[in-house]
Image (cartoon, rainbow, N blue to C red):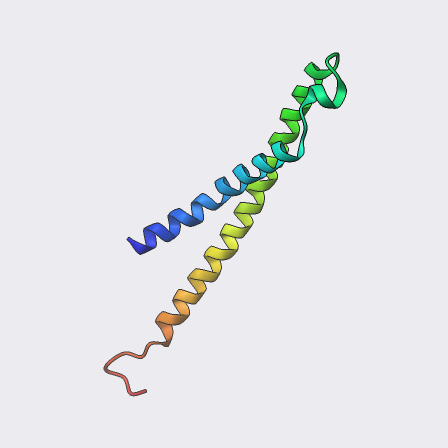
Length: 92
């Protein structure tokens, strides 16, 4: 169960990073009507969605890198701990 939860947390990292990047983008970006006026707000909304998708893609990519690095480090640490424990039949 512990291994399952560890893998579940590692798999959730890219999704969390993407959601965080999308939330950050909506916080720093004003509304299209306030930025360019009512006349061009229709065109701005499409660009804004495009930029938000790019932010989310970048966040997901960063999450994948962090999850892969963390997973590799945890697996290396676990294997090292298993190899260092001496068997009961062997002298230390």
